[in-house]
Image 1 (cartoon, rainbow, N blue to C red):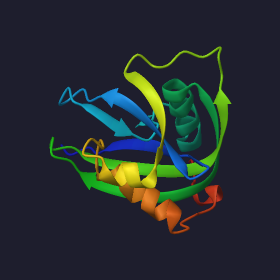
Image 2 (cartoon, helix red, strand yellow; image 1 turned 135 degrees about the vertical axis):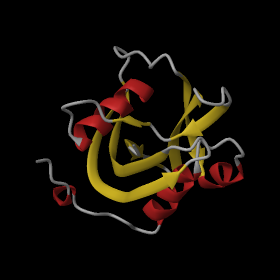
Image 3 (tube, rainbow, N blue to C red; image 1 turned 90 degrees about the vertical axis):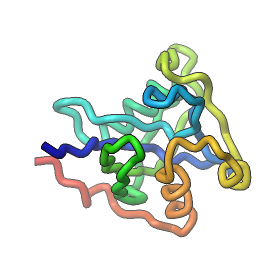
Length: 146
């Protein structure tokens, strides 16, 4: 039975730099860069999931303001991922939080350094940033949780 993985991601930009997390890929064991992102947990809304994932992976509080895009990726590992990418505001680091154990560190990177990277987790990273830069913003009330 085919079941896609549904994920969320936060596209955060400050002063021309984008927030990415450095992590070890569980499937390849390589060090990769990704937006704060992850899977939705049972009973969680899409917005709740992106807020939680961003806090766990960056120790920053994320306030979603718009949906940037909805993406479908057939990955090399044979899985299909459906990603909801959000943008919004992000706080400074909350010193009372602890990074998820899978995260090595966070980085604020320029677009040029992201484009030059050979270690992006997937095409989803740059696709979301490009859509963000092209002004893609959809209201959160587009999402319906039934």
